[in-house]
Image 1 (cartoon, rainbow, N blue to C red):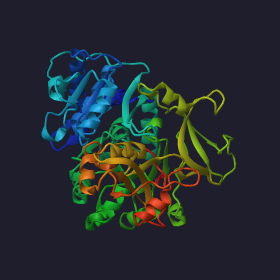
Image 2 (image 1 turned 120 degrees about the vertical axis):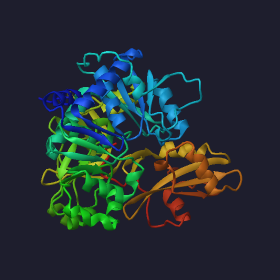
Image 3 (image 1 turned 90 degrees about the horizontal axis):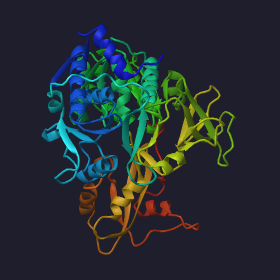
Image 4 (image 1 turned 180 degrees about the horizontal axis):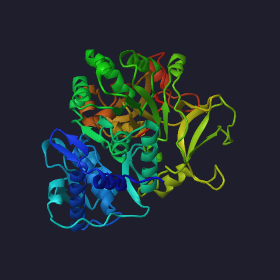
Length: 516
């Protein structure tokens, strides 16, 4: 029987109250302390008038406070909405305006992000400490199926949209991940990805579900490989997960060799394409480490596959995404909407089963467009937009994206949203953003037509006020006009050639994993 995260954590606190649970540079909580604090914060939420189904935005950096606040929301029945503390204020304000939270929980510190919008705020504000200090008794934990959290992600609409994940889907995903990775009470995990990105949930919540310990370091500090390696050694880390791009960063460090003598035994890669060469380089240093490739769109809850990578896969140069979790189904359709049953034949992936989202917040038409009931009789499936094929061995292999949503640095982003931000810049009359694949790395070029000569640095600064760093174009190129193909579509090849990128080739996506 699948156990939800909160119930599992409450059980660990009862059975093993002194077992380490969550640790960051400022806080060290065992399971009894974690549950005690989460219960007090849940009481604080209720005292502030938060009721079941209300949204509670968490403007918190990677920290023990985030874990406490998320568990408190699950406890009270509120929907927690992680916000990126690094996002521009304008983007945060748009997300907050869309989800209309009953409360925004912030850290009250300089590194905790700017509270979105100009005062007076139409929403209530509180810190975790303020919520925990009300002195009220914790409420009874919420039960029954409901929405657990909402993750805002880019999409083909060009606007961030809230993906609503139910408690049952959340429990199924976490339970399957913990089982596939072999996590247990001896697990010590290091969280690397930012907590507003649901790929981080695949590291954080399966460890807590299993009664293991979670170690958190500031996200900025982990951009320096030495911080990662020192944490792995000093904290006895056994499991961690991150993007293949982060693995390449680690591989570039001379401290990579220290993994050979560490306790690290499991690494889960997700968010973008796994490189067989990078995995081989990891194994040269730490051959005992088990590597998993995890795949799953945000709309299907964190990840729907966890493939144990083998030496044969690495030697072949192709790392599949694997097979779906128990309770999850894969269906492939060809370009005419017909089922694809033949191994090796590419089709668009439709995902069904226990991990489907509830829908998009406030967007029923958009929800209906991707949660389809006309593909598999009697079932609802999610149209992923991913092109894959099933190998002869039954493992699924990712090929490409079927739309204009790309993945860069492990984060799913929309070229439409980026283009809209560039078009809004002063002096820009027309713009187009094109992704290209340069030796496995996703790059973005913004081509602009202006009413006057434009300065790329000034454009980057202005667009950076609207978009997070991960979404900014790598280059801004001013052109006289935007060339079209014979079918009146944007001629991306000519644009790339004008930027000196001829022969590189545009790509709709350069990743295999769409987790997040």
